[in-house]
Image 1 (cartoon, rainbow, N blue to C red):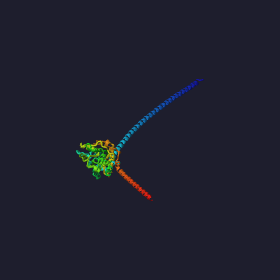
Image 2 (tube, rainbow, N blue to C red; image 1 turned 90 degrees about the vertical axis):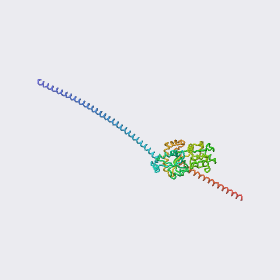
Image 3 (cartoon, rainbow, N blue to C red; image 1 turned 30 degrees about the vertical axis):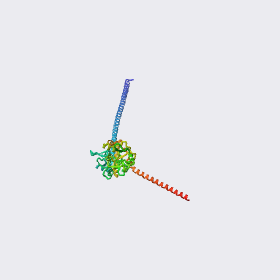
Image 4 (tube, one colour; image 1 turned 45 degrees about the horizontal axis):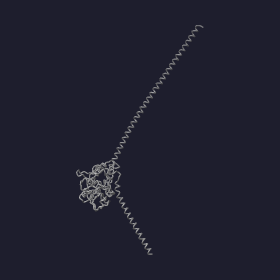
Length: 418
């Protein structure tokens, strides 16, 4: 082989070898580049994942913050709602209290009646009789005193009537006076009786009380009951004109026309016994005890073991009275009176009044009504009519029986004659 060919082959081999090496270098570079790309992609993916995690974390934090904010807002709203509710409840309670006060003062509709408004502007005039401890004028101060006065004053104040003028008169003139318009009301612990209900409009009862007797020292006639007076026609009893005792004694059989000495007032009753013009005097226990203690005399005494009569009207129930056509004022008075009974004001007045206690003299709401106390007048009238009808029926039956007997006798005589 020639040298030229050998060199040519060598050159060719070298060229091929260089080309192979170059291809390997390219492949290596390409491999490195691919690895670099893959690494970059992995890094990018990791960074992307981290970013996504960061975003998710941020979203979670924001979500948590939003939830916490929402909860705080809800809590705040709940608190505000509770406060609003409490405020509304408080307003409602306040409104109800105001309405109750309005109702007590102004009636169920919350409006002041014209009659009450008139008294609020001009004051109320009240007629009373000088009868301790119910109603009387203190001789030293000139002020009105007594349980009945104190109760009337409190009730009218509850109605918004702050000015009350007392006018003293005889007991027997109280009802005629209020009927004639001389007073707006009368009070002296006056008992509600059927016959009085025909001439005066009574409020519901505000006190109750029993009867009492005062006799000469040592009780020489041994009088312990109304029946004892009835059993001895020689006994004279002093009574104040127009009082319930006339009816009570008559029910027990006392001869009113021949055994009763009528006087003007309580002091006159005790004076009659002191002077010997009467053997005994009768009135409500509270009245007699107060008068007896005030008198301070050894010439008379209270009958401590007096037997209360078991008759209609005892115990007595005292109340304020109005003119028959003054229902508007009477109804307003009843509403205010009920408020003061229920809140304990009347009990307090009775406990602080001379001769009274709440335990002995109170009248509970609903215990007895003025309608019930006035009703016996009609019931007694009906009973009397029934009794008269029954008596007429008996007389008719007896007459018919007699006529039948006479007819039978005539028929028998005719048969005998035949």
